[in-house]
Image 1 (cartoon, rainbow, N blue to C red):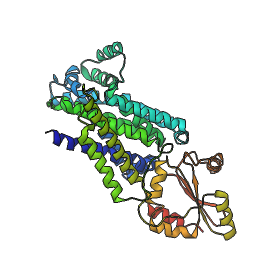
Image 2: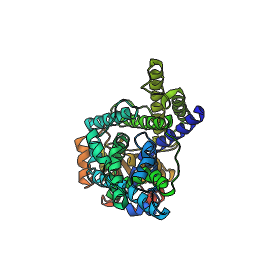
Image 3: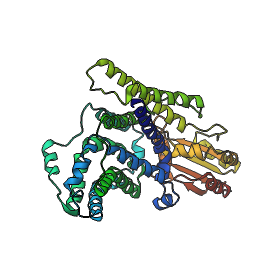
Image 4: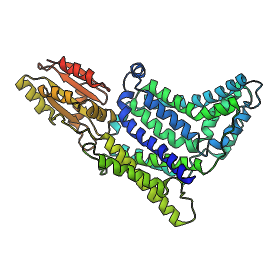
Length: 439
């Protein structure tokens, strides 16, 4: 039984890994115009992850044990019909959404300068510390909780009826702060990097739906959930491992962060082995609250192995695919002078190691063999705004182009005039058409 639980939890952690990469893979998609991105289906993966994060949050000790009690409090169990029960349950879930959705809007509105702030080691250190603290709370070292007096007052809110169910849903999100708080901290930081208000609102709405989906099914269909057990603590450990990996990931521009230059299968195999080995050793099912030091040490070793495995997988996913790559000129002035002297068009790529969208453009578009071949007729310049490479002069170049943030790729005609620019993710075919139009 325990072995099968390990396998299941490993799959859960692996999903978080995929989405740690997805956060890098999808950032450019998230900054595209919302309607276009949604019509193209490029938001589905990100929103699916957000929904799973909400569902996983509902399986934590702060939420899961209270589901059956809560649906009775707002009257779904006593409703005269299933339609009435569904209405009450829906009102409760919408109450949760009413709490979280504005947070997504505010986070996106205040995150316009977030990309620039990520060049500061102080900001990166603060984010890393925040995620580490949230991870430790998930491991049970402390709780992020509201004062007990306030919790008691909130618990008395609501009552029967649609209005009461809505109010109870709203305050339920506050009462569950010990488990929702750490997840929200990560999610809101991610939303802030997009600067997209529509996506911020939708993402947090979907997160709320994920939290409330079990409440809805229990309230509407009067189903009985499995009893609470150790597995809900294991869920918190899985969250903690993912958050601790994020803490180290944000420091990749400050601390040594080994990763392959190109995707190597051996690298991936070792990373997956570390992840699986960490779960088996005890990263998930053991507890730091154990009375024996041996158990605590096994838990720590397992967590360290899982975090290393997660970072290894993300590093492999961010590496460039095998094949030819564009040869970049590092000096903008030198590249511009060469383009003028040779009467050639110029391609200017503004990028940074902290910009997930830039990395995706490099990996999926600028490394396309067709793009590499077409780029040979351009003078190709890269302006690197990574934490350890950025200078005031480079940031000034970004202002010259009147661009508030990254990504940015600018194509110039041979006469120096701007032909087109890319500020979000595009497909290789579309990028090739833009390149072909440059003269």
